[in-house]
Image (cartoon, rainbow, N blue to C red):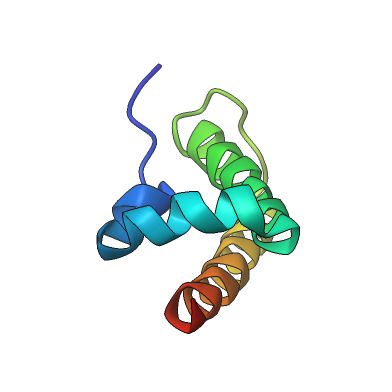
Length: 79
């Protein structure tokens, strides 16, 4: 499989320790991180034509990924 861009560790390299800690101790954060991962992988599969989808659906997923990333960033800054 090719490299999947936009993984959380790449998006927040300064927060690697906090990412791991919050995934292990905060169920809400862990759920957000898992949802981000699923959405990000779906976008990557669409971009690489492994699982093509409509532009509208891909756009919805991109917006969802941004919302999740924003929520994760807020939680990381607060930790």
